[in-house]
Image (cartoon, rainbow over all chains, first blue to last red; front, top):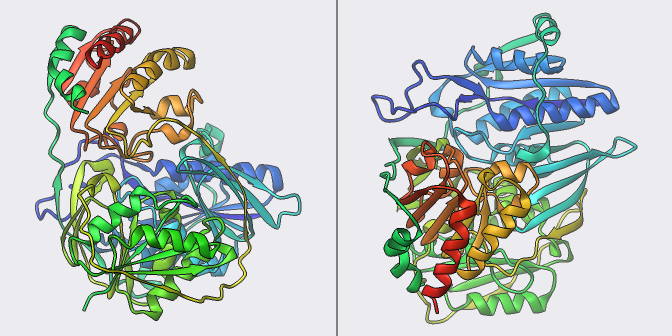
Length: 253
Length: 320
């Protein structure tokens, strides 16, 4: 089975963010970057499917040159080859259409049986690309996967999704697009032998402009600011003091 | 002239609250709003239409057996058909797991369309505010497309709805393509408690509660006394103490109750992202350094095992 997974290089969620001088983006200087946690779960899911069914896992990333590191990590986990599409244009940060069309182009060349992506990236928190891409591909999609089971004949997949109010099970023909949720799996750490092997696995770099797809972002950040933090309140000694403060609120509910 | 349409979500009986929140958001831009109902049978379509007719001028509905259960591909097809046929240029939805799974597909089907997710504020007809980077950042976003698809965070749009004088409804015939995705089952987590995103009091617990039994023994009585919803940190959902549906946070539920109790929850940034809109946050934690105390309005540094039973009993007395 050929599985295509996407990995995005994002700001570490533990990092203290600052707003850039022009107030249109965050300050990327000295910012620790990681692989989007949902994408790592996607890589792990793909590797588990490959281990069970045989095949190949291709890792695709769209971003700056340093995204190579994130692809190499996925290769070190066990993926087979990587493709980096160079684009660090901040104008495209929320350009779902452009990202999806680039991925579509790769998918049309590679013809994977399955595409697995993170449900959202923790910088945009957009939660659009997997679904948008599935429509461009004219295939089914399953968002927020909790469990993925490939059918015996490898032509379909059963997905249990985390939906509001419970768990929903659907079955989709392959190929389709699945987006990962937190409890799908726990990604493995890259082993030292894995890291060594990864250095020799193929990693192709293409420029986004080579695709001749119009970027023309329709969704643009005009201004960003740091969320006003909640001011730390008071520490109280005991329950009586607490009820002294919130008692009236409770009674008025 | 702008034409607004709301994608209606329902539970096969009533319209979901999040849909009403989407109507509230749309009403900040226009008082002439349409709603689109997709359901399996005519009776249900008509009763949902009746429910909505108080607040929207027009309800369009499509009855189709493929709409028995919400499936993204067929719903996207039906929605984009209506949007295109009647030239709507604003498509609204209350953010939910289904809207997240479906709306981007609608966006992809339409020409000159773009989508903005999870807005918390409408600035004007092409400018919206939304949280990013787990809510550390508030971004002002401009959408330049002809068709704008907008999903809203229900907790940020709780205003009373304007009523309309009269409302008309129309059944839209629509042939759908056969799709290769099948609904198998829905395992619902039934609860007597109010839904997390709608409750005015939420009592959440985390790892500090030691084990699932202690969690239940301490959290449930407090929640019951306050008629509250029960929430959870990611850690205990991962550890299978409670259903995943109870997770509060950046990638779980966003809540904005009057009172939010964080019990034995350290207050990681992703959890805080889901509770920022709460009116009053109360934290109980053994660890004086826990980040939750940086955002709580009131905190008690102490053992939840001792504090919670006392708190529950004293609130019972208070409410007598």
